[in-house]
Amino acid sequence: MIHAPNLKELPDIEHGFGTKVEEVWLTENGHAWLKQIHSSNVLRSRQGGLQGEADAIVTTSPELWISIRTADCLPILLADPGARVVAAVHAGWRGTVDEIAAKTVHEMVQLGAELSSIQAAIGPGIGYCCFEVGPEVSAHFGAEGRTCVDLAEANERQLLDAGLELENIWVSKYCTRCNADQFHSFRRDGEKSGRMVSAIRMV
Ligand SMILES: [Zn+2]
Image (cartoon, rainbow, N blue to C red; front, side, top):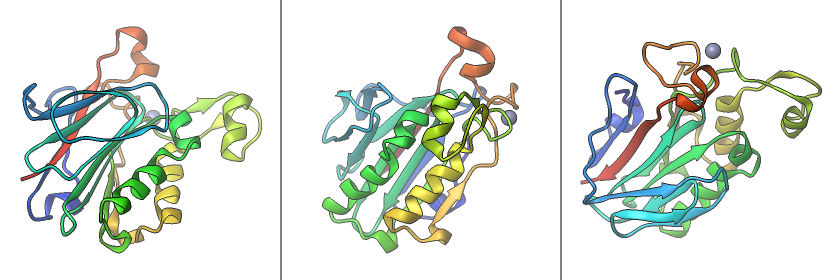
């Protein structure tokens, strides 16, 4: 399990980015999850269970774990402990293009979060080294032809544009495809790939 230093030091916040070898332990009770569809839908959650079709969850409910599952896509966890708002985001290239991270920040602000207080952590996903895409995808990222795309950098920029402070954003340096002993990777393992669960809650 990987902990972002900036989230780990927050009062009353628990979180983890699960790996292949160390999973985030969650029960069905007190745990909200999504049917992920590579959208930019953000849902508010008040209780456990399947919340619906979306790719980000925001909650103000104490004790409620909110989780997302990934294998190359980016898991992004956010918190404003003062306003008592937390969020979990699944950002693949489609969600990134549709600005799901920024939409999640806006939803947090609707619930009382302050931009200058939000801490964000971008967990392990496919790195620039391995995320080669065709022209139909690269065009969305301001590039041409077959090239590599840096999803983490795109999401970091999006969080900055949404109003977060640079020092309040932590970015994992791990590439899920490069590190087979630690991470599942859809690109590397295909349909048989497992998924990693990342989650956050307030206590
Ligand atoms: Zn790589």
